[in-house]
Image (cartoon, rainbow, N blue to C red):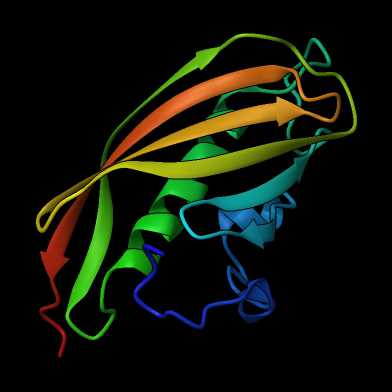
Length: 143
C-alpha cells in the first residue's frame, strides 16, 4: 500500500473538495485501492464543449484532480504539500453522455517529485483519455 494513512478508506472522501472545480464539475471519488484512486465525472452541460462532446479540458481537470489528490495522500500532510508542475493528455475517444471514470496510479514516487498516470474510460470501458501528471513535493512553510 502506497498511502501515508494506512487506514484510508473511500468514506473519508465525503465532503472533500467542497467549493472547488471538482465539485462544480460533479467529480466524485468512488474507490481507493492499494495503489490507485478512482473518481467519476458526469458528461453533461458542465463538462461538454459546443459540439456536445466531453470537453478535453474537463478530462484534464479530472486527471489533475485524481493525480494531485493521489500525490497528496502519499505524503505526510503535516510536513509536505504536492503541487502540479506539468500535465499532458491524449484524447482518444469522444463521449456524449453518461459518466467517465478516471483511475490514477503512480509511475514514480520520489522525495521531491511524483509522476502519475491517469486513464479515463467511458461507461463501456473504452479508453477516452490518457494523461500523465508530474507534481512537486514541497516542504510546508506554514507550519
